[in-house]
Image 1 (cartoon, one colour):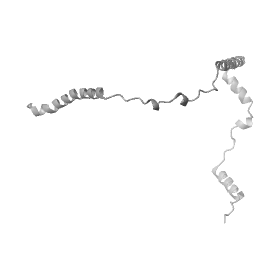
Image 2 (cartoon, one colour; image 1 turned 90 degrees about the horizontal axis):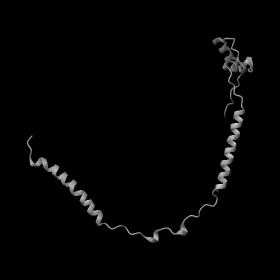
Image 3 (tube, helix red, strand yellow; image 1 turned 30 degrees about the horizontal axis):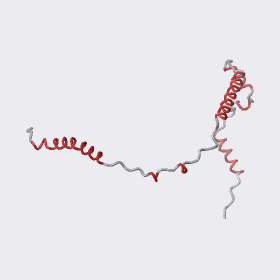
Image 4 (cartoon, one colour; image 1 turned 45 degrees about the vertical axis):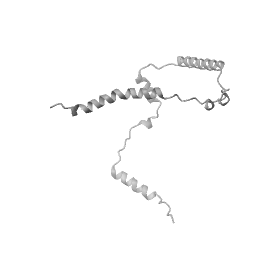
Length: 135
């Protein structure tokens, strides 16, 4: 490829723009004047909100912390007094099963056939009352 002046012109313009632009921006910022503060637009002391009066005092904070620590100690004492069951799980399960009524945990003895289910459904349909007719 043959190098010509036309090929280097866009690159030269880009380099020139990079060199000139920052100094142009710097010159623009130094000549601008800082905005003047308007003293009348600032809030006055009388416009500030009144400080709250219902804040918690250090003594109230200390009382709350002391109360929380006392409750924590009471809870720790109660949990330390608990008797933890560290026996074999099978013993616990057998004890729990012994307290349940055997009728509730017995397996279903009878198997219902589809014919029996259809007969029961037919009997229920005969006993059922249709809803009232809306006029």
